[in-house]
Length: 289
Image (cartoon, rainbow, N blue to C red):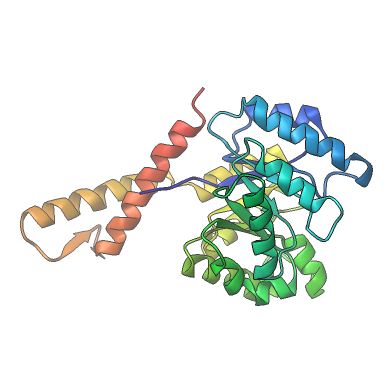
């Protein structure tokens, strides 16, 4: 069972050296060193050199390290991808992906730069990206993660940021369906109000209930809630252990029906229980000092 926790995926500005250092001590499953939104035009080239150096220097432990490039329709995008492909980062994050061809173009640059097996994360931030999500998700096995860019998507759709995210529901669910149909991971978009802790926790719960694997974050103060909501709880672990034990006993006794706490258990529940236990184990190892 190959599992990588991505409960909390924290963007850190690539032009801020202090932020890059701070990320080494934070409880984020994944750190995304950003060359796009958080970096001004005059700092793009310097930030690129800085994040590549940061990736090479190490110190991030077992955290996954991704670098977000500028889009390919900018003057920095291709050079960003080439530099990331030659770095020690775990993958490239490409913003504003609208077609499978754009993903293929990024993958071709990565391969030409000597990284034919490096994973690509694609950000879905526009209506066209949502409408083409099945083709994008299916284009290549190296497209491993889909990232929702809900801030830009809400703007493009002209829908307000409401707690229920009613105007985004179709887009979010369509992307989750495409991710699951193609064996990809998928991450929910950011929450912008840093002072609304209750609202953020609710947003995490909503994202989990929609099927997302984790949430992208803009500040370290959001880490605890994301990790708590998207990770298996103690109750989940206890129940998983009970399900597996009951299943093993039933198999040994030749029984075809298993009931745990009054609920029928089938093979799919056992698979999910095993996934919960494996995820809990990996999470425990991830942030060990």
